[in-house]
Image (tube, rainbow, N blue to C red):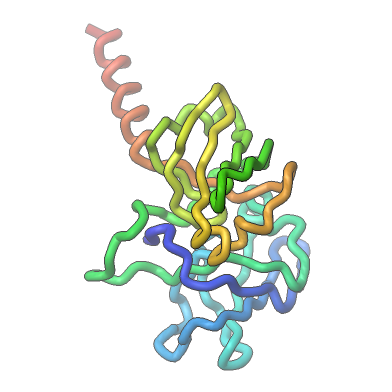
Length: 204
């Protein structure tokens, strides 16, 4: 479980593709002295499991074909900057919102508008995911917890403050770039409950 509050912008140091999986090595400035094999780290919003520690500044993870198909890791290159957040510990502050690290798919940057020191980013989401994005609700982009400012069909807008622009890789986005998106899971629970309520009413 994560909060969507990015703690470091790390870097992909190595990629080894195999037929059914890929092995990636990540570098971070975070203190890894208490990290262990099997721990979870969200990288650009994708929950990955630590499989090795090549040295004191790097750690490794294995990505399945499913993960590669749903995320920006499908075309990631060595040197790419990635947002990182270790798993939430009991007692930690929940500064963002509840994030699972289970990426739903990709959203695309439609436009970027400067608003003083802030930037308004408008994204296009797949139709099957747009239904879970609501005005003033939460959305996770590249692992970053953000508030939805506005929604129009499959497009939604978020406002990025200077801190977010400088402390995540979102500040480097250009039009047409893709980001990993995780919608708020509460919407999915509501939809599932309503589905069974409807089925129950139909059988009465």
